[in-house]
Length: 180
Length: 226
Image (cartoon, rainbow over all chains, first blue to last red; front, side, top):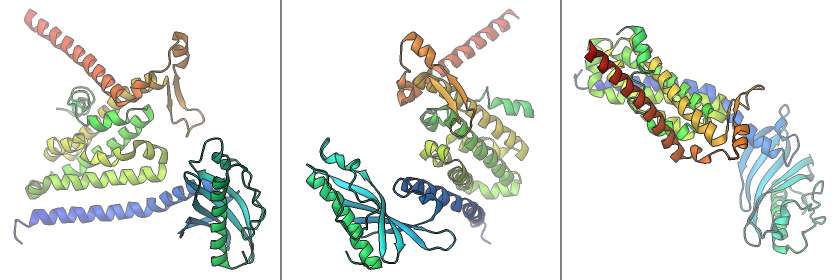
């Protein structure tokens, strides 16, 4: 072999050994890193769906106003128990981001189990009341928004929250059927 | 030089941070808490000792040394980068808080002058055992230097030092807040900022230089008298 090539071959061999070693370490640490990341997400999701951390988590990208879907499934049967939707809508002067948890009672009944405004930049003292307001949607069907109670004096901000619920309702109807 | 001298030179005589002033950038950045300093020190210990060992093993044979010589810098970087990536993955999996607080400075250990410097200046010309001892001494010297800087910065900046407060039921704690309250001042937040890092580092270097000068003057006068 050409003597000038030998140092390069040595470097190549060292690189290959290092690559194999890294692949081995990665195979050990990657599942733990993923489990840690899932736990952080599940702990934050538990704020809108109690007991979220006791289920398996799968993430799916959304479309339109729905940014992301966090699908919670039973650890033994694998059945979908609930979906937490990360959803957004335009308010009076900002984008309102929400998490809305929908539980699957049966194949035609989808109940809102919790919701939270996770970020907003609405008018202080008026629009930002949406953060702590009870919109009377817990335990209501996601396909029926008749119980929705807006914040008086904050029409646009409440409208954004309602749009969030409507977006989830539309998504549930398109994915699983059921009348809106 | 015997093994004892080889080990202790990294801690005092050739301390990488306070004497040769190497690797100052990450050192000043991460010394906002004692916990960070210990974590960074352990990471550097692992990388430095193993990189010294591997590089020494690669160059201990004269024929192999000649072969590696033209590509030695890429070889050192590949070895060091691999070790640093292992440290990063292990910290990310098992010590998430420390991983988050050290942040970008973990991958930057790859380009830390201390590690590359010891590989080129010592490990490539010495036996594996000597290289490991040198790596251990240098890493412990570096860790002690980081700890001394972070000790002053955290104590003056927060008024309180807590080590592994979230991991242990009985964390190690040193609380100076009552003294700050007694004097009637708040902890000096500036010490947690970059300017505090430079001030602390400069102050420690000045004290060490004064001690060294005093020692040199004493020795000179003893020689003169003799």
